[in-house]
Image (cartoon, rainbow, N blue to C red; front, side):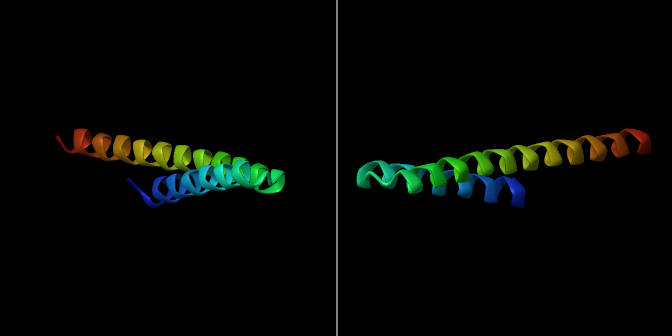
Length: 67
């Protein structure tokens, strides 16, 4: 897991928490902010996963070239 994956997952959790708190307090602004944070976190986590997979593929290619 790289930094983007970790930060993205953290933002997702933060967003879900804000949404839940917004529901409990009937705060629509907080709920929308939580939805936005969760979406941003999902995107960042996806980017991190893609970056990690590309890195792994490049590493594997390097190993294959060495052989």
